[in-house]
Image (cartoon, rainbow, N blue to C red):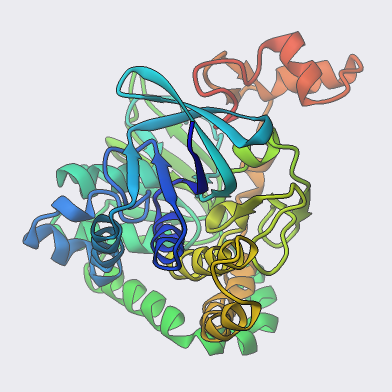
Length: 416
C-alpha cells in the first residue's frame, strides 16, 4: 500500500487550505471527509447554492466557494462520504467509503475535524421541533428551508447570523431569547482594546443586531429559567426576563450557546489536552504550527480551538508549511518567510476572540441542569441520575457509562 505524504481528515476551511498548499509544495496529499461535498459545516453546500439563497446567506458564506474550487482544481485525491473509524500504528487509517472498508497509510496526519455545538440541556430540549441552531442553518444552506414560528435561544454571534438570514428569507424568528447578562458584557470590556484590532468582526455583529431590530424581532437578554413546553412537540418557550415570566408561542426552537472543538480523533490518538477557561472546553496542546505531542500528527481549525473560518484557513496553511519542511519539500527559511503574513492575519482574526468568549459565555443553567432534565438523550439519563451515581462513589465519566449507559447510545457521547 503506497504511503501518502499527508492525509487530511476533514474538508472544511482548515483541511481544504492545508491540502491545497501542501500539494502545491510537492506533497502527495489525500483528503478524507464524511460529507458528500467539501466545505465543512461553515461552507456546507456552497457549490450548489442558488443565487437567491446566496443573498440570504451572505458573502462570508459564499467566500467558501473559493476554497472548494481550489481543492477541485488541485487534483488531490478526495474521498467524500468517508467515515474514519481507526488510526492505528504507523498511521494506518481505516475508513468506510461507499459502503466498503478501506485503508490508507500516511507519513503525516492533519486532523481538521472542526467543532461541535455545545449541547444545551434545558427542560423540554428533547421534544420534536427542538434542534441546535447549527442544524437549522444546515436546513437553510442545503435545502432553503426556513422554519415558521421559530424562536432562537442561547447566546453568541451565530444567533444573530441565523436571525438575520431568516429575516432576509422573509421568515423572521418569533423572538431571540439571549442568556448573556449585563455583567458578562461589562466583564468583556477589558478585552475591548484587543477586539478593536478585529473591528470588522465587531462591525458585522452590530450590523446584524441593527437588521434584527429593524425587522422588529423581539429580543430578550439575560433570560433565565428557560423551558420548552409542549405535548408531543414544541409549542411554547417560557423564561424569566427582568423578574417577569414570559411565554412565546412557537413551533420550532433553535438552541445555541457556543461551539467546542471536536476532539474525538485527537483523544483517541492520545494527544494531550488542556482546559481552556475562556472557551469553557478542552483543547489540544499544540505548538504554533499546529503540531501535537504525538509525532507526525497536526491539528488545525476549530478542532484546535474555536476561531472561525478565516483562522482555520490560515492555521491549515501553517500546518502544511511545517509538514512540507519536515518532508524536505521546502527549506526552513522558505517556511518562515511564507508564514509571516499568515501569522499576522491569524493574530488579527483572533484578537476579537477573548472579547466574544467573555461577552457570550455558556448558559449556566444548561451547564448544571435540574435533576429532571435529560443530559443523555439517547439513553434517557437525567442529570439527577448522574448526581446519584456520583454520590454512590462513581469515579468519573467512564464508570458512569457502566452505571447508566450514558454516552453509549447512537451519538456515542457527542451530545451528552
